[in-house]
Length: 87
Image (cartoon, rainbow, N blue to C red; front, side, top):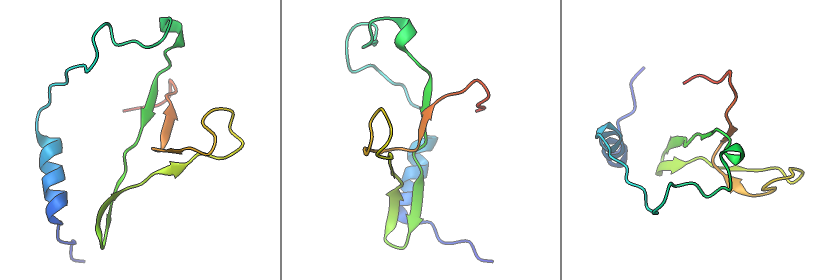
């Protein structure tokens, strides 16, 4: 089976992820927008990049309408982190 040829934007994206990064905060202060540390819950998201004939796309999900928080919103897949999560 032949591997598909990498698209130019895929080569560029892979090279960008391979570069070391230093992140600087955009806001001043301690970076917390919450009233207390008890309100901070670990979470994680996945940014799936899908190769299609038209090029690279990002996969998003629509949250179901019956949820208490953010019902019907478009989002990245992911959510609250659990102690059993690895990675």
